[in-house]
Image (cartoon, rainbow, N blue to C red; front, side):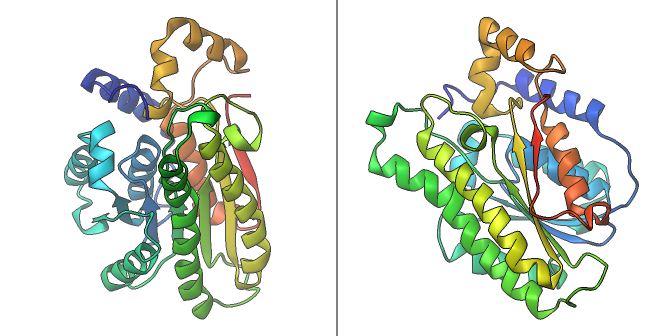
Length: 288
């Protein structure tokens, strides 16, 4: 895991950068219902705020026991945003460990009981152990796969099952959107010390393409977002290292780190009907 939790100053810095990058698009997700796993993560939190601003109802799935160690005020910050913007009726939290196979059924049932439908699924929960390949334990390996890949596989299975029953084949309007969070690590480049994490992200990338074909007949679109160096807790150890920080900035064509809002803006596009003819795509968000 990252070396230490985020400081309050680092959290506020990230949130302020997200505010500056947010693009006003109106209520493009008006009355849509979205499930976002990893809602208390920086990526999930930015996407939650963006979807709420765009008119969606959001089920924010998080796992308090694990998430609060890294980002202690995450859910409180989102709830404060919800309160300040009058979104109380449009946001519900669900404390669930996504690694359990039964979690998918719990999440889908709670969503349908609350809002009556599901339009969007964002599989964003994820984490990494930092450990050299030869030192990875079976516990670390299994936990990483269960959270990052297996849990999302079975949640997607439950969501697709419900969506297929209510879908109209080959209608022009989008019937559903599934968005998987992959990574340039495992999908495009190699990186030391995160081999189980890389496996899960490569697996999600393959699952995206497979499901895009399998679910396309029901107008359920499946795409993925592949972030590069985004300022999240998993990358803060590099950001704190001035030499490493500068190296990453120089490697980017845009000359900067990415922020969670950069990813949330792409998620908004993929969730909306602006991307109604986009499926099986992997959008790389790494600054070039």
